[in-house]
Length: 205
Image (cartoon, rainbow, N blue to C red; front, side):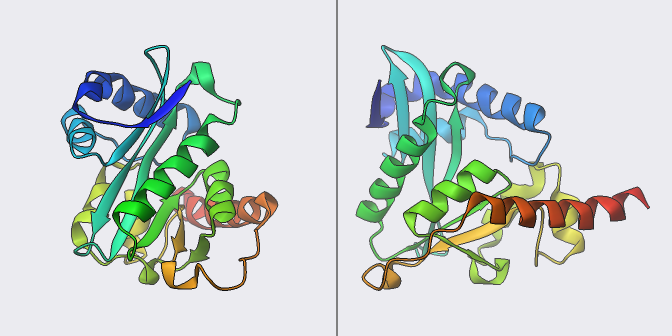
């Protein structure tokens, strides 16, 4: 297994990456914004993506997005092919893309919004902290990307203050301070359940 910074030669995997992300959204039954192959290919060409390959077979992927003129960056589209799940690959990809983000954008805050408990735990291990959406980028183009998510109506009716996703932020200004407390996955699970009960009950009324 190799995990490398993607380049133009890896654009041949763009279609299967997008298909894997779409399939995961359907299986999970939660919000994952759709990606288009051309967009994913551009990320690879610009050196803003990481891909995992097993002897040439696609295994996993994640990419970097910059927002607010580089004040914020996000590690988005983290996906592992079903054949390679439960092997710790997501954690390895997350660590590589996070390190790459810190190298390319050393002064940027790194943020994430996700409904995935495993991703929340990975973020926490890297030093991210749960935050309100107001602490994330106000770049409208980022939030426009949520329009393809099945939970977009929740985001709009709360005036973009909250959603089923949890916002998490890594601030480089705090990296030399005392090591952040690692949050247990059970805490994220309770938070997710509270949000689902709150918003889904409203939908049923």
